[in-house]
Image (tube, rainbow, N blue to C red; front, side):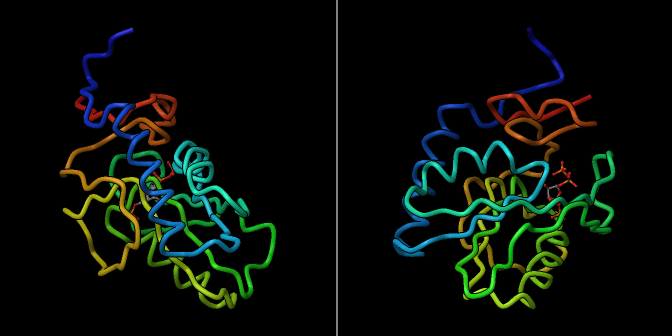
Length: 174
Ligand code: PRP
């Protein structure tokens, strides 16, 4: 099925290779101990599934439900928590797993929200970094790909809830 609104930006094989590398980089820098991976729903669910397997070893999987776009193509800056972590993260080495960091408002909110729960450390891994509209200076520890200022879908990222199941990242042009 071809959809001429979609243009492949990052093909499946490049994602696969980069995720494997990220897994190795994360273990190198975070060590061999347990890592609590916190996937930010919904967008991160595909990346999270591949990344935790690439990291290997002792990994806890937690999820945070967050909504900030409310269905459009632009960030509103309003972060809504729709599902909280199931377990405490006190004294744990945590890794927030995102599909994309755009304005940075969501990540900034999450970092402040998690910091008060007493984790040993909190690092950030995003598959995509889109710096064009960054509104807040953020330290992102692990970045899969830096992308240009385009609206992208696939591999977890949606437009009106569709396209999350594409195995690649595509630029969407209406
Ligand atoms: C996306 C993405 C991040 C956020 C990044 O989520 O998953 O959570 O936007 O944008 P920002 O850096 O401008 O804050 P979205 O609200 O689209 O929800 P979804 O993950 O459920 O698709």
